[in-house]
Length: 487
Image (cartoon, rainbow, N blue to C red; front, top):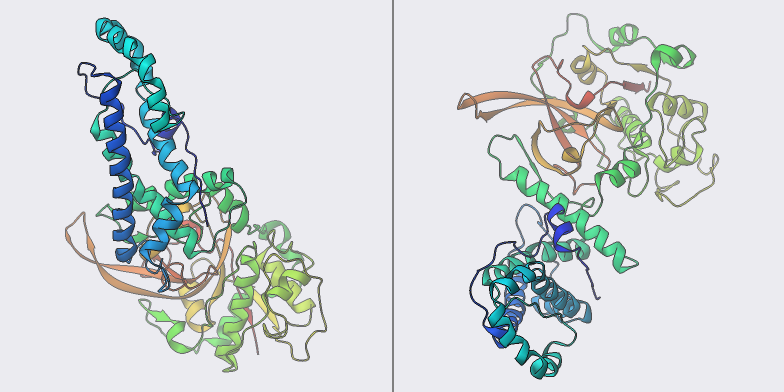
């Protein structure tokens, strides 16, 4: 595997926070091209040696919070060095960085000529004689008129190997294969931007949650949003009356909640009561609406019938006529179609294939998992509904902070409007340090099941800050909140 990553010029590099050179330099008298060559040669040797040392070190120690299992047992430091640094692409990378390093001084060449005109004349007399010798050693590498290089620049260049190494580990862990060098460059720049945001967040003290690199690392937020945040908002005021199978909350809660029943508003987690099925991964398909609604039905079968089943999201993606498959859907219309379809097959009978086009198959299985009706949850009854009815299918406004959530109680920035569907499976509380009062404080949270795999968040779950009654709903949580019912 060979990688060739091209980087923008020094000016554009600043905007990407990946400038490989610094503007400051030592203003000393010129020492001629010979001095420059010595410095360049030493810099190249240092860079190659430092690269080998860095990758050897990080290959062994990359078990931190950002890359917990980046390398498998079959990987070796020699493999990484050989593949990335000793390949033609790696050599081109080193040469391009040296070229950029030298070229960064060209812009100041004119002023230096005026200041040291006598010295430059002497240099020019020697330049023609030594030009052929330089080309033999450095090929077509541009030689700056500046006669001395600041060693700090070479040191700064070497420190950026961390981001290159991190990108390599990311590519290896997630099996990325880019078609062109341009695509790799684009993905690298997106990766570095995300990595810097993660590091900046985790370096702060007054935060309740941590961020970490994951499968979305080489996507810009615009790309991520277009691909994964595809929930469509349903206007209940305008179209709610057209829903045929929706029922009234008060009628239902009276059936499932015993009279005079009370419950602990601080904590209830359906994962501890065998009411939540394993986390799944929607992969490269905007099918959050299907995973959210189907996951709620799975929980109903677990709670009402004591059946732990995996129901087919793919059948919903293929057969829900009121939704648009991998391009998004509506939570209430998914429940409507589920009833109209006469139920869903198991995942075993109708397996998930993500974004591979499939024709709808209605009669592929004998046993179908059905729901009777569904209902909308009042905004002040979330904890009651979770406790007595089960996990809820809810909407949420996701941001890039949310996308790279690793653990803790999320109190970060949210999206502008609901754009993702998840499952509310419980609520809880814990004591956490308050940096404002410098004391321990009780923090309440909702427990949310996502559909981005178990490597995301807290084994596929996220905790969102709320209050004792559950009235606070960050990130527009539950703007749409529904539950299906199984008798």
